[in-house]
Image (cartoon, rainbow, N blue to C red; front, side):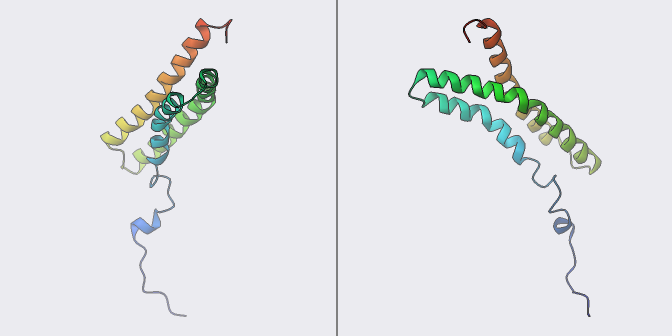
Length: 117
């Protein structure tokens, strides 16, 4: 049986690597807060919007540590492959800080209104 004349290029070989889509999840994390704000703006009932705000912050309590672990893992892989650029590092940092600020606002709200909430 003859071997195929096709050669495997580096791009085809690494198509299954997590580095190929490593900007997708940070993009979703970066879009989480604007998405929740847009939902809150267009929500008709203010009490349900308040619940959405609390639920979105409570979800971040669980999701943000998982996301931090993912960012550390993907950064380590990019450093080993020498594909870690300044743009990617800044994008990762911003994509972590924006949900973190939303979580801190949630924590501030819960601690200041602990008897009401």
